[in-house]
Length: 113
Image (cartoon, rainbow, N blue to C red; front, side, top):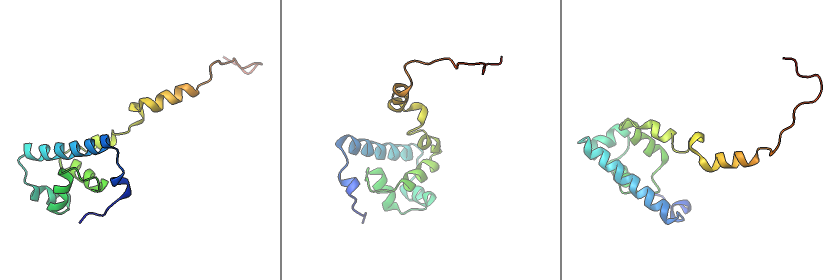
């Protein structure tokens, strides 16, 4: 039986839907490859019940289980790209907002071209 988690029980509805969709997508990836849950579980080194919980969108399934599933499907690079800095538009916007509005040239003879 999965552990209860305050973080899992307090998820916003849009996060719950995204996790449920992720589970469906993983199940679809498995079925497209014509792989039974038992074989995927063996390759992931987890139980069939854990694969079922992952595919059902159970938010208490650990990140290591998700990473293992992505590895089995050859999609590990997608995990690395989830919050990649170059795709973080809000973070980039914050960085740009902190830039100085004006700049000044360095005074003195410190410039030797």
